[in-house]
Image 1 (cartoon, rainbow, N blue to C red):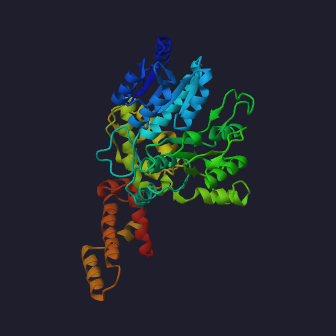
Image 2 (cartoon, rainbow, N blue to C red):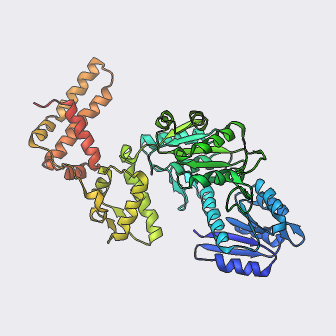
Image 3 (tube, one colour):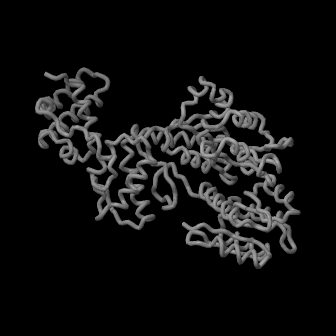
Length: 480
């Protein structure tokens, strides 16, 4: 889906140049020469990002900014300012502007700032659904899973999101921590204010503090102008601190003060600033161990974990893999222009047997790669990457085990259940289902001569589910 950028500037040359530089297949650039026309386009087009000259003919850009926020609070505004008006631009940023650029424009910097704004706009506006997919827009992201683990996570998000507390999300890399953070934001009372995501591991230690808190002009080499940090930009909104376990201890101390008092100073500054920000943090590290090793502050840990969400690894919810695989299949079909319509049962079985060290992110990559190399309308196992073809488990059952599985009869089940009814033993339903599984699974295994793949096809269940049932049956019945 293309991004929309609106430029409001009364200089014809600026409008023409920016439109030429920023227009591309996935970016639509609209222009307006005055505030009236610009505000009309804001109402009609709901642009993702707005470039706004702070001095328009007959009207202050600051007044236009206030009107933009009344029309569409989620539009991100980047001010264009002359050297003499940066103070006004900084004041606007304190009120919620995204950034400001100084004339004459550095077009490389312009492209970088606009790209960052598009990413933030996407994070704020693309829906993240935590319920049924029915009626969900195709462009939305989904927290997928009908198994008990993911249903529990979705219920917790529903309870946590409206409460104005900090949240700590724990989970292995690739389990969907940013998706959960976005869902919390979008279902919160702060969902009309900014949402910014910072990867603490991806920013060099000497720049992270400036990125979060901003800096004053001359604070360090290269600080040619005052910069407003992410916390100021995110006033009244939500900030997502990803990989918070990688945050250096000097920055941890400033984060702690902000969480305790709502105050901080920019790097190189003495002015105390106040902000109101909800913090959602995430890490794949064991913070308890890091605290014992002196690498993470215990007091910050308790401030961050107003509520803790622990995301399950994909290998711990294999029942969700078919739904996830089909979701990625249809999503990448649209993106790649492929036309694979289904996934074979053998492919799904292979996906469910893999351990997924990279979790959902790895599954997504596997489906994308398989679609690129596939032919035909069905995704077959041979199109899966090589790592999914290694360490194949045993797929047949021995004759002795087959004999053990086949010792249950319909009459035996009826007699067993009737006896339990007479004795009024608790847990009858569970035991009756176990007896039923023993009969049905045992019969399917005998018909397939011990071949698990054929037995799973007869029963209409996945091979991991079949193996789970086989283990349960063998545990209930000691070998002769």
